[in-house]
Amino acid sequence: MIFAMAKPFEFRCPVHGFIEVDAWEREIISQPAFQRLRRIRQLGWTGYIYPGATHTRFEHSLGVMHVATRLFDAIVERSAGLLQEAFGYESFDRHRRIVRLAALLHDLGHGPFSHAAEELLPAKPSGVKFKHEAYSAAIVRGPLRSAIEEHQVNQANFAIKADEIADLLEDSSKAAGIVFWRELIDSQMDADRLDYLLRDSYHLGVRYGRYDVDRIANTICAVPGEEGKAPRIGVSEGGWHAAESMVLARYYMFAQVYFHKTRVAYDHHIVEAMKLILPNGTFPKPQNNGVAEYLKWDDWKSLGCLANGKGDDHGRRLRERDHYRMAFGTTEHPEPSEIDQLKAVRDQLGTVVRHEMTSTKSWYAKDKPQIRVLTDEGHGRDLSTLSLPVANIGGHDQTFLYVDKGDVEEARKLIGEVDNV
Image: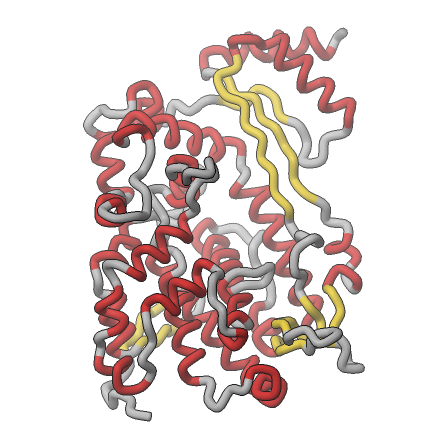
């Protein structure tokens, strides 16, 4: 196998240290479609609540590639024999590079202000909205195709096609030897989560998202499948507490940061302002010329529109930090009596309510492929059968009622009348 002898290029990362890329990867990173990620903040308007939240999708993407590579290498080191038997690998080099590039490019399709903009993605003929992953795959197949396929490092060593990377991102790969690695890109313990929890915690100055990534990397392995099924990615028995801590860290980050009442209000203002700014109120579809038009949108362009007075009242509220205020909120797991109270408060407030938001999330989906644990006896078990917190963590179903700042006192008075009934 022929590799370029040039010294790897290094990015200094505050979370992972030095992240190395070769000439081919650097060429991909240098493309305008990837450089656009420098102009999209990881957490949208969260910097108005946590001033340190200025990091972008660019450094997160580098971090996900680094974590995915670290996990890939650890799995191969511990489970090469099992994987060769299951999938007939002669070499892991080509699959390693596909996983590495898929991790690097997984967030190409994010729009301005990251997840806040996903509500503005257009619908398919079926009525289901496109997801940002569809845009990531379309960008890989389109603007990035030549940078991926025509670089001499790829042509001399791997012959990787852009469609192979896009298929992995879209979960449409057919080859079992590729499908196995999908869990590093999208699962309940994927490289994306492992990076953003640590990265967001670092930049926001909170500790909620911290967990032992080193222990996960030191115990991750291939877990044999049951009854003729293919192996899955998991951790050895000594690592399940680290996996448990990651699940809990994700819960804490959503409860304390991502679902913060003020951050939720800003997301609403962003969506409503952008509906007025975007042609037809949505982003273009990831088809034909739509990809090129979509790539023109980033935080910079959107902020320019807002700074120039666009977005009407919601744009003004973003400029002046005059967000809606939360007047009433349920707990994360409301009892039936609390739901009744919510209905009564909603009726009592009437038109004073400017926005109602229900935040729902499953912290650990037991009806989807679970994190697997390889026991000392060589059997695979689901994490929830070992961890009591994970087995009982439940979901999040919290509702907030928002009012204008000038209506806060009136809202409190009206809510007090409900409480006194």
